[in-house]
Every structure is written in structure tokens, then in C-alpha cells.
Length: 138
Image (tube, rainbow, N blue to C red):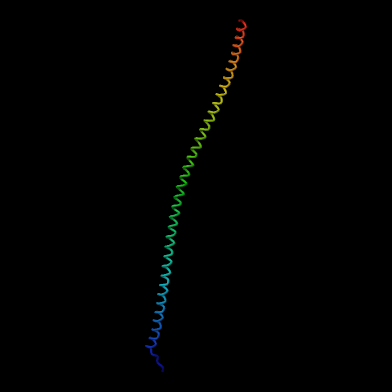
């Protein structure tokens, strides 16, 4: 019969298994360290992106506030322009009415003037006639 050395066989197999496990563990540790580094880099990149996005968000918020302020100012200006335009329209209506009334008054005054001038012309002619008569009598 042929006998195997169980101890030697066990040692060989044990050494191979332990060596393989060590190899696998070292490979796993290296892989884990590689993955940790990769995850750290990714986290750092994500944090940098978040910081950049936050800065952009803050900038956009500030621009939005400026735009809102500008819109409020423009609305106020627009309302004041509307009020000014309404006041102008009212004044123009009053002025147009006043001009029409004044034209009517001036027209009547001119007619009165012409009537009085005609009357004075007639009186003057009458006075000239009277003068002529007085001169002829003497």
C-alpha cells in the first residue's frame, strides 16, 4: 500500500488556501483602497460642483432680486406716467374748452366793436353834416 502524508497534504493545501486568501485579501484591500480614492475624488468633485452650483444659484437669486426691483421701479414709473397723461388729458380738455369759450367771447366782442364802430362812423358823419350846415349858415 501507498500512504499519503496527511500533514504534508494538509500543509500544502492550507498554504495554498491561506496564500490565495492573502492574495485575494490584498487584492480586495487594494481594490477597496482604489475604490475609496475614486469615491473620495468623486465626492470632492460633487462638493465642488455643489459649491459652484450654489454660487451660480446665489448669483441668479441676486439677479432675480435686481430684476424684481427694476420691474417695481418701472411699474411705479409707468403708474406715474399714466397719472401724468391723465392730468395732461384733463388739462387739455379744460384748455380746449377755455379756448372755445374765449373764441366765443372774442367773437362777440368783435361784433360789438364793429357795431360800435359803425355807430361812431354814423355819428361822425352826422357831426360833419352838422358842421357843414353851421359853416354854411355863417
